[in-house]
Each structure stands twice: as C-alpha cells, then as structure tokens.
Length: 96
Image (cartoon, rainbow, N blue to C red; front, side, top):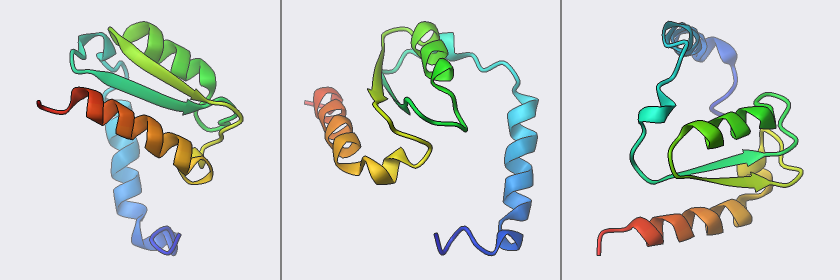
C-alpha cells in the first residue's frame, strides 16, 4: 500500500491508464491465441463476475478460475489459491 499513497504521485499514470482504456473501447479478446487463464473473484464490486463470463466466452480456450467470495483484493486475500493455480498453469505451458 505504500506505493498507492499519496495519490498525487500516481495521478499522471492513472490519467494515462484511463485515457488508454477509453481509446481501446472494444478489446479484441477473440484474437488471443496464447494459453490464457483468467482468475476472477466472484464478489468483486469493481470488476463484476459478469465480466469474467464475457472473457470466458470470448477468448478461445480460456481457462476461467473463479475465486469463490473473492473481491478486488483476491490476489492478497486468496494468494495461496491463486499462486497454486498460476504455478500449475505455468508448469503446464513451460517450454519443455
């Protein structure tokens, strides 16, 4: 959290993020060909789980991992589960 505050130190970067987001309004998710694992919290108020379903229905061969009860801080609150799922994914697709 130390990197989050004060907001004034990040305001230029945040403004750029918002500008880039709206510049690319429709993301070409259907063109993704790389192995993809999408991890979403089912209780996220910032990125609703309906967005996860959209991603799962748009990216070819995506592996959707719902984090039951996970919110926008799932990476912190469910770190063991997420780390295990990411490790599994990376192992499966690591160069042999």
